[in-house]
Figure 1 (tube, rainbow, N blue to C red):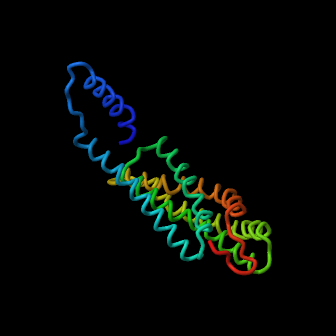
Figure 2: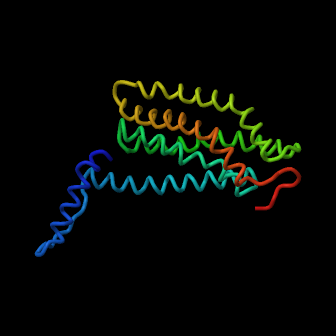
Length: 210
């Protein structure tokens, strides 16, 4: 696990490097067994997360016909992932189950930004200014976002309180999704409108070319 790596593997590897660098030291140091598997999975997860982010961005760019609106929508993703990783560090470790939960969380939290940005764009086309549109969109979409978040969080509670065979894996996934959604939703309600004012295109008449 990542906790074992932090407490044992990393200091041990550093010590071995010092021994190898000492005069007369001629050693090759490498991971094996579970340690090697963890290192390989960690590198693969980074690539998977990056690939998933690119795919989501391209889909949103095609949907909104804009390169700026997807950035506004996805701004809450790293905040939600950061919030989930805090609880991962406190209660479990980074493993295949938490990694799957993080990828799932990225897709779920993007839905909130889509609701706000899409409605704000429609209000701009109806004649409202950008500020008026995002203020009204955030207010109108507040209840649907909170209800959606509550439904999704309650839906993964059985994973968090699961028992029996495989309970640890289900707990890891449920913890990541529930905490990430709760924290990500809070950031969405405040950060997305702010970034919308800074980055989003104006839609009062025709869509601006990006």
